[in-house]
Image 1 (cartoon, helix red, strand yellow):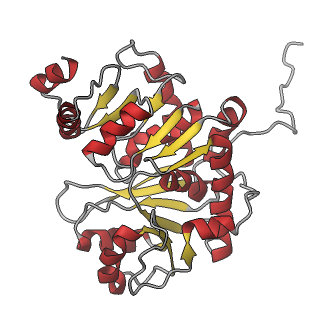
Image 2 (image 1 turned 90 degrees about the vertical axis):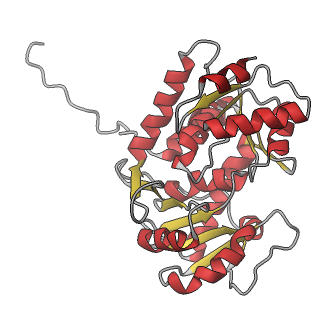
Length: 322
């Protein structure tokens, strides 16, 4: 009928673009796909999604509320991936603390972000001990470690990561909220003066994740990223969210490999043992990787690598393609 008024059904779900939506597809299509941490841990997507619920439950029980900032001092790991999701999904703000800044700048970024809680790899306990007096807003610390007994130094932790997850419920009820809610914050490097804070909303990062898959899904064979790939970041997760690839890789349901601290021999080992086919990093990392592969007499044929951060020298490109 001409002029008929069209109304949105009252029962229609508005589908906010928030992080929890990224788990629908992989949970259905790839629940048994693997997420690997070095040569130490393996989890399925199903297990990882449960661990995300447990982390949110543990943080909530510890007193973390929506809107609070939770900082993470960690190398690239399954724990960091879990924090990438759990913290924003519960309505809190994830701060990826750049551990390569100077101690004074690390303290500044944590304090400036107003972080109330820190998840801390025990490799950074000594660093944090020296900064404690400069972090009056931090109320609680959680230690993470690959060791049987974490090193805690003189710091007081409310618990150890795995112990807290084991005691927490996987059934956290992640709420819907405005997709323009702040999801993450991090601080720029290489600028004049103190590091500058940047933040992103759920909407921005969910759209970025989808757009990344569309862009690389349309690329030629040299640069295509598809569900048949095995993904490993070599851009730190504390640096611009590893360029957003961990979220895109999860949405795609691909096998993911997390190398921890970047040790050239370990990177080469994981590429070969886990069948890594897609990664990303800066030219310096590519040079390091090529040198390590040559020393180990390992052929990196079939590995696709996105280069950013600075221009790729022509000679290095030819070396990588040789």
